[in-house]
Image (cartoon, rainbow over all chains, first blue to last red; front, top):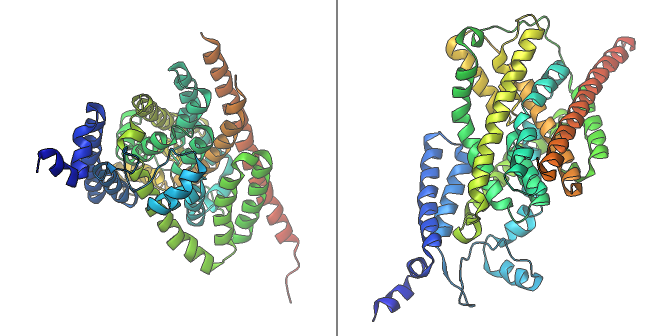
Length: 404
Length: 48
């Protein structure tokens, strides 16, 4: 038996040796990166709920490449690039994750499931207590979402691709997926992967940004609380219903996202405990598992080997960095307007990603002033960040295809 | 400046402006709802 026949038994190795140097290097690189993601998830440096399935999927899909009936190299996981309906019907019976991808991922359903789960976890009372302040901070923290768009166009991306990668600045994974699925179907795999990778890295990076931009004296500044507004469930439910209807009316393209978010809020505030338990438990965690798994297996070398990926990696980090800076700038503006009675760190919580950025802000403050509590203000800004990101998604999805 | 970049800058300014206005409208709507609910609650007669 020759070496060639022996390699034929182990097709994962055989396809690796017969691939181009670029594909071979990418496959090996992704196998190692997947292992690293699982390790970082386990250590808690990155979000384990996403990184463990995503990392494992990334390693497995790049290892498990074989020769298909057509003679081409491929996997039995998923084929995201097929457009032929007859072939798709075949794939649905062969690739084990194809049904999840086709019926839940490529139409944005999984993003909507995650958004419903986020809605159930949100207490909009924090926004209702200080609506203008929270919304102002959230808008400042969208700086990256706004500025990355012209930067990406200047670097050669199309308007649609630029809008998709700019949404990384909103730090909302489902929103980035939704925008890229509508605007950049060819690039939504790398954009989705970049977005989720960076969301994990941001949690580690934002504390350094806060320490760099806000001096210790200001980080320790207590927030003056004149009175604590008590917001009833009926008021929160009314807000959810009216805001959902108005935003769907304004941006029908993003209506599934608005609906999903406010459905979660409405279910929670209406006291529908069975639904709350289902959406906040099995649905949210099931969707997160399959989201991580699907994102991981989509990182197959031939799918992700796109010259634009390096550019997307750069633009993603720029978007999140600018949003963080914008949020802190917003915090400084409120600090000045309130006669230096506002902790500017709260501003960074406007970078959405409920409730992580709010927790990061509180953690940075607690390190220098253990008795200072900014979490209610930070949560208000963070929840508003979800709403402003959804609004910007609606605007980008509507106007980007119209630009010439 | 290329026409594409000029268009994208105008679009970015438009997106910021429109999203800011809508966000403030949502905040105003929230405040209005809050005040209206409080007003209605204050007018309700106490149950015997």
